[in-house]
Length: 446
Ligand SMILES: [Zn+2]
Picture (cartoon, rainbow, N blue to C red):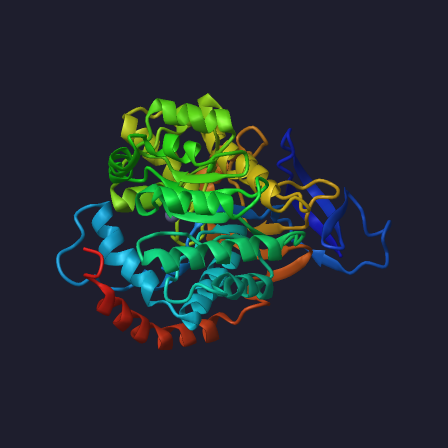
């Protein structure tokens, strides 16, 4: 297929904006880039981009599909007063309430959401303690049917007993083996957080998988994680994870809000990835991670949604504003740092888990994962001011088409792989039973 009449935002190392350009999409890849490709490839069908901006699809470095049913759900009793209470009263009873259908529809509704918001690759961190064995297959099937790319894991935890932890380990090992060589589905080894895994479980996780695997775990999201780790081991969270072999160039830690400087150094030295989720951090009132310091230290920082709707530009904007108000200094969190996280680092992280696909750039041979943006700048837009045009001008509602591996998942606002109305209606029918089970588990952890 030839995509003609496009303004290409390439996000190559030296970003370029190519007006009035065409792309050849062949075998899921970008085969050629140029002015007039129609004459060169007369046999190809042509899609007219109508002068829209065409750029790589967005990547979400950390999310939880399982949180979908929290939308609109009431929490019984007093409102949670801090993050540990949010876990006990909201997330743990909710993930416990998910059965196979609940897992499937959580993934389906967020797949619809991702496609509409132009997010084409997602790192999901899953929990469903009532349905562990096979849960990642259910999510993997949704990802494959939707046409997206995903990197899955199951969060191992001791909070539901030894059997639950063992089943979680098995699910990770199984999926890591199953996903090997798949360019649309990858897998990490999931761990919930230091505060819900004892030393034996950490060692069992490490021992169950080869050195080539990476871990995906929440770290120091709230100070409770640090105090718990100190009490358990005399070590801070990152030191404890290092001792148990969890860090490394494939491993991902989410948040890092309450790490100290030495923990940040350990992440940098070990090449461990860190993901920033500012909307979630604000909603949980856990604090603000020292993201600029982390970048300066050389930590590879990516950005994710943590189960919020998968609008990555909105997450970027939240990061851009949050760090300014937090420091009461409008010079903080430069838009170039946002691009470093949202474009460069997220794409490099995706390369670690989906090595066969080159994502996050429009170059010959890169994956044809593209979004079409109907944006009409009323001031000059250049490669130099693009980050600010994106933060102050781009909105996900301007995305008209989403393509992954050369296949349209949404074309001119029409979803082609998933039926949103049907999925939403079936999901609404399922929700009352999930909410009822959720209510029956509230109080189990407090
Ligand atoms: Zn998370």
